[in-house]
Amino acid sequence: MSASERFTVALIGASGLLGRAVGAELKNAVEAHDWRVVRTTHRHGDAGSVSLDIRDHDAVRAFLRREKPNAVVVAAAERRPDVCENDPALARALNVDALQTIATEARALGAWVLSISTDYVFDGTSPPYFPDDAPAPLNAYGHSKLDGERALLACDPASCVLRLPLLYGPVVDWSESAVTSLTPAIVRSADAANAPAPMDAWATRYPTYTPDVAVVIRGMLEQHAQGETISGIAQWSGDEPMTKFDIAERIARVLKLDAKLVAQTTPMDATPRPRDCHLDSGRLEALGIGRRTPFDTAIAHLLARYPEKAQ
Ligand SMILES: NC(=O)c1ccc[n+]([C@@H]2O[C@H](COP(=O)([O-])OP(=O)(O)OC[C@H]3O[C@@H](n4cnc5c(N)ncnc54)[C@H](OP(=O)(O)O)[C@@H]3O)[C@@H](O)[C@H]2O)c1
Image (tube, rainbow, N blue to C red; front, side):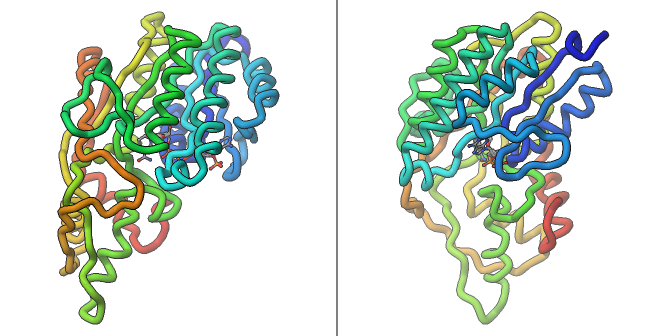
């Protein structure tokens, strides 16, 4: 089979928390199926990735026309709620306009788009949430991701949105994930000279391990390669509910620290966040797609090298 005939996946945003895990998992698919994977990065490039600013619409079109992918996985986004709140134009440029251009060009080329979205499209008042439940975002991030979902599916109803909750996994910096970012404060609180660390005990989260999501995405790509494309909205979530206070207690246990944690029972964040957005994962489970690593196993693995970098 020539290079142009090989099933080709374009992974846009390969340098992020999720993109790196997906890139690693797709290496296995390259070996198993002889797929071709083209990875794009922006500020954090590496050897072998293509530099692409998705706000440059001509560059996005040129990239897709050159690589002619069968499938495009979009993991590039602005996902920090406070940044989206303060810079809605940036949130829109990345989470909506860029996706619109990718969707339009991909459709013209006959490529399937799988774009990552968030549980923050819901208001968190009546979980669990099914793919068809009415979204009602509470903040600018959720609004921009919902607009992106709608732009993609309006452009090509055969494309797919994969909604995910709070992610954690191998990090280049402990602050990169909202799970591992709790660690320095937990460690500091264990020092007798320091004050207790306040931890949110109001919102229920379902921390989801990026290598598990990567397995889900690989499974969805394999379905597409076999002609059984998953279209519309799919969701994947870890199944262990916990507040950040619970997460902090587990991290302290793994690090064998006598941490001083204080449960905050009212919201602590400046940007409004939903209380409980548990995503129902039944659609993918019914297809036999998915993997869930227990939280304690995954976090112990990640923290084994604390305080050094995890990667
Ligand atoms: N993290 C979470 O807890 C979470 C939860 C639910 C859903 N999600 C969703 O999951 C997806 C992946 O999130 P993540 O946590 O992996 O995000 P991330 O770590 O912030 O990574 C963002 C990615 O977007 C790329 N990017 C940023 N600006 C770009 C630009 N102008 N042009 C091209 N690429 C650009 C970054 O590239 P460079 O680093 O090379 O600049 C990076 O690869 C997003 O859709 C997010 O909304 C995340």
